[in-house]
Image (cartoon, rainbow, N blue to C red; front, top):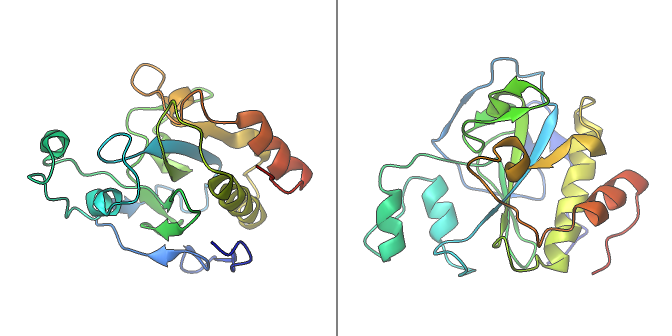
Length: 195
């Protein structure tokens, strides 16, 4: 993937210039559209451990054919989304405008504040807890986080967290294979991610 794509964020629409747009119905108004103060990193693959298919976008768009795989049967009636999804090759897809609430965090808490969906941006990485994410994903994620920090003053490198941190009783993603130190250092110090 070309890493020189336009990462500009349009404050009026909440859209990221580099992202392919697929609208998810699983969104609503934020209680305070100005309060975007946390980035939550997730990991997802459907079926688990399989990459590259249409299934994650289909899940977020409520069009997943639950008869296509036995694992999908457990997802019938599930309504979830994320603002953004980064595929293994670095492709960026946006499902929910940043100024709206995506349904990614579920029951969650960050520094004593519950309902993280209200004030966070959810970013899903195509992957699993125990398999290394790709260099292309990290490069795209670093670019995206830098753009988010530039667009939303309440965001800092220290306010990038994982689903496992905000919902530790329920979630483990993005998992131990995720390189937190390198991500935060790359975002904070402006160092290019080389993997």
